[in-house]
Image 1 (cartoon, rainbow, N blue to C red):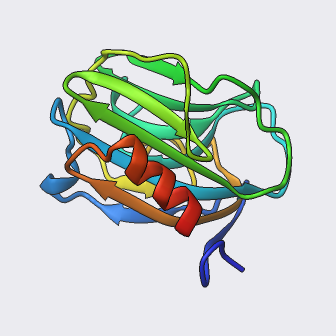
Image 2: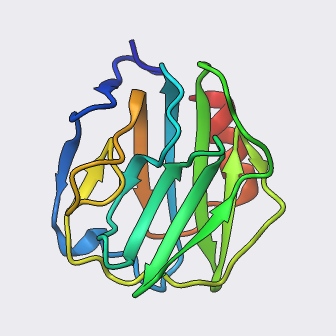
Length: 170
């Protein structure tokens, strides 16, 4: 039922996956890429976590979808800052979402297209676990309703061409 093979289905109420607390998941100020395929099966009017290593005290990173139905990269080192997609995605289609940090600048891509906004906030090293399907790893809530597939984290910045290829080939 996934975008490629089998994905993970989340009910939006209490489903989430614990990805562990390994040190290599702390991306900090280095270059990185986070990408995932997502398909919502219901529209919610709050935050929906896709992949996160953020804690509710504002430290870490996350790919989320928020109440205005825009995908966002959330990063913080004591306070969360958001980098938003250009447009809302209010549908039940598959979307490829990628966040890239390169040379201290954060970029967001939706369906292979780089979004206009950028930010320079640095994600702190989240003390919590990597989770799929909810926003904060230490807070019960902000669950995703739908399917998540092909989550990938890289300790390098993928180029715009690599993001486009990932969107086209996956």
